[in-house]
Image (cartoon, helix red, strand yellow):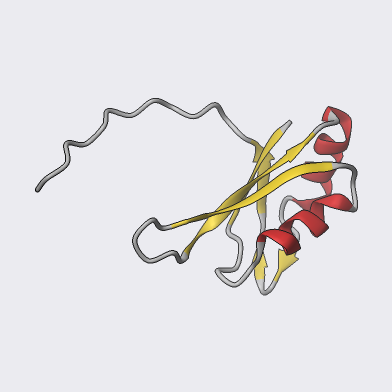
Amino acid sequence: MNIYVGNVSYDLTEKELEELFAEFGSVSAARIITDRQSGRSKGFGFVEMDNKAEGEEAIKQLDGKEMNGRPLKVNEARPREERPRRKQQY
C-alpha cells in the first residue's frame, strides 16, 4: 500500500518517517520528496507498507497527528498522473 504523507516538517528525515510508520507494521520504503535543484524537502513524502490492513491503521492513527509542530496529512496515495514532459532549453 502506497501512503501519501503531507505537511511534514522540512527537517524530517526518511529514517524518522520510516520509524513513525513502523509502529503500525512493516515498512518497505519511506521517501521524502526533495526539490531537484536545491535538494530541500518539498514538505511531503510517501511510505510503502506491504500489509494493507497495517497501512490503513497507520493512516487512521496518523492523519492529523502533530509532528514537529505540524499536523500530518496522511492518506492512501493516488496513482501518479502522467504529465507532458517539458522541452529542455539550452
